Each structure stands twice: as structure tokens, then as C-alpha cells.
Image 1: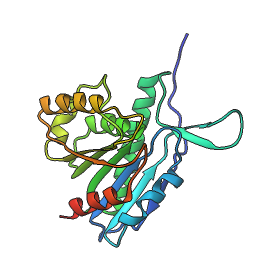
Image 2: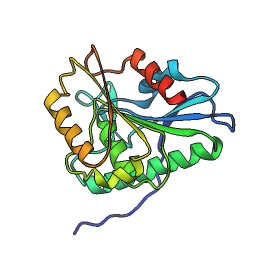
Image 3: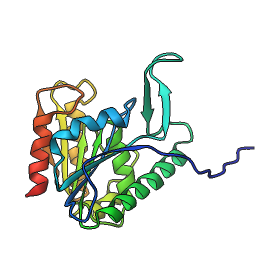
Length: 215
């Protein structure tokens, strides 16, 4: 017999900048598989200012990256009991957003998902009933098992951007093109930004995204 119970637990997130009534831009950034939020958020120091804050929630599951000790990474989900894990992180991210906007009620929301964090962002936003200015899928795409139309109403007023490095071994161009066909069929018209690089964030592109969001 398989049974489940819901339990309280402690989640961790890291922040750059200040959340206040003066905050105009709130970025929620979701890390990739095997990363930790406290290191991931460092990439966003260049876009933080008096009106811009960044929050990096960390996936609820951690593991040793090699063997039984040493470096630790986090993941948003695995295939095991995946639907429960998706429900858990959606509830978690909803609480993060609510907490942040209670402190910064006039901030516009920007969401960036890197790699596995991109799929996480898509599943989270599919249930959203609130506005969002910008969604950036960086080296990530809508999950293949997800109906994009479920998110199209939320994203119809959102600036959707795909970003990937031209040398990224995990992002095949044909997969990106197939994804673009899917999202355009759902009525979405994303911007595509590429850069000379691999499976990584790029400071020049981050600054470009920040400038777009402030315009």
C-alpha cells in the first residue's frame, strides 16, 4: 500500500538587492540540475540595482554530485513520484512569489529558468492567474509532456525569450526549432537570443535582458 502525507519543511532561497515599496523589478531565477542557489545567484549581481531585486529559490531535493560525499547539488524533480514533486515545487514557488510581492507590492515580475529550471518555470506558470512581464527560458524549453496552451493565456501578455549558447551540447538547434513551432501554434511569439558559449549564463545577454525589462 502506497500512502502519502503532507509535511512542513524548510526551503532555502537567496536574494540580491532589497525588496521594498520602491522595488520596481523582481526577478525570480530558477537554477539548473545539480546547482545550488547561493552560487547560481552570483551571476545576477550585474543586474541588481536600487529598483531591481533577484530571488533564487533552491530546489527542494539535494544530493551528492559524486559518490557519497563532497560537492552537493539540488534538483527540482526526478521521474520518481514526479507529479507530487511538481505539485510541491509549484506550491513552494507560489509562496516565494507571494512573500516577495508582499514586501515589494509594485514590482513587476520577471522569471528566468536555466536548463531544468526552465521546465520548472513553465510548469509553475501554467497554473498562474497573475501577470508577469517577462519569461526567459535559458537553455531550456517547455516540457514535451506539457500542453503549451495551458500557459498561453498567462503568457499572452508576457515577453517570452529563449536564450542558448551556440556551443551548448545540451541544446540542439533542431529541438529549439521544433519548440518554436509548438509555441507559435499556441499563439506565442518568442524572441530568440543566442551567444557564443556553452551551457552557461552570459553577462552581456543578462544586461540586454535587464535593459529590455526596464524599457
